[in-house]
Length: 88
View 1 (cartoon, one colour):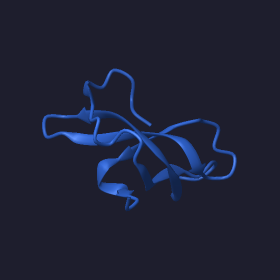
View 2 (view 1 turned 90 degrees about the vertical axis):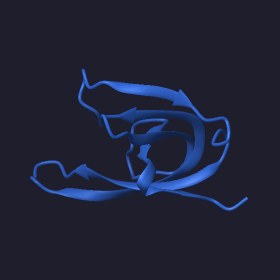
View 3 (view 1 turned 120 degrees about the vertical axis):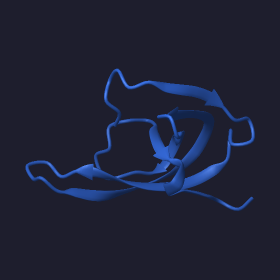
């Protein structure tokens, strides 16, 4: 998802830890120059990363309850702007 060597500031927000959320994002479609949408639902860990001088925040979501078919990972980084929190 991120290029190696890109600087970021890691942090932890206890208010987000354990919150249920949904996010969507894009991924390359194999064999094409196009991208498609991917949808995820799960539990935020509270971990985040801020990239760039004007922070671009990403939240770590694990315990995935929804993911694209064949998604090989147990967690995903979600763009803060594409993350929707479930109401408690």
